Image (cartoon, rainbow, N blue to C red; front, side, top):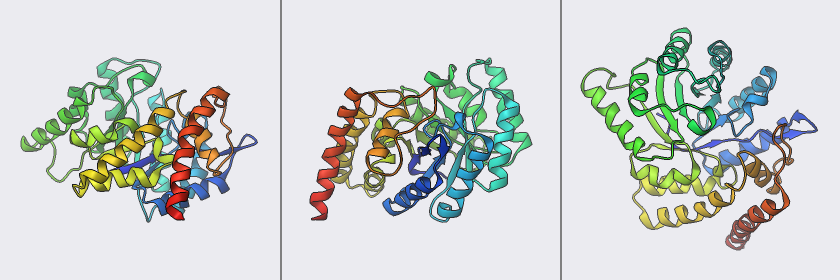
Length: 307
């Protein structure tokens, strides 16, 4: 079961190359802050712009340093079933806990094509797979009934859902429970329902989600983990405070396309250069000021608490 505050980690670059030393610093930061899992080489990590060798370096480094602390999930998405299999085989061979996979993007396959895609990759690999529904980026949606059909495949163990309709989370949770009662999914098989947008984390928990794959947790991992632990312990005062504080950062980070704002924010904390690969370009000055205003609030609050 994947749960809690799972960080969609950025990929640091320096002069056009993957900056592994900065990546190591980020890994230790998340270990120390109580993060519950990492997605490496996902969309926030500019995964589609990494070479296979770069992906291997990042995944190996994450596994060596952090896999004893929390699960390492590999982003393994492609518009091609064949290429997706290549990515999955790499993640499987390295020993990743799971792979995060969108339906094939850009080509917009019909429902039957999406189903055959996931059947094929689960037949030919054995790594646990988290579905990733992000219709705004991929161009097609995974409706709830199709998610429930896919949930019956042997290695499909959950979903990251970035659909704006959060009620889907409750419907998926209820649907999986019904399929288990009908014997269509083994009772012991996990199926994690994870929010796909940081701003949805708190309401998603109330709708039965197990956690969130978060962008904001790149810079506020301790607060994101606190939100989840407060929910689990029914500490509603702490939960509400964490929710409201995180929403300030969530809002600031929505000023440009992900991962542009979060890469700047991570660089502002001193963990990496504010560098990304084309066609992504750095945050403009007006949005830099907006992110700085919110970041400064948290940095000042942290300094005051430390004093």
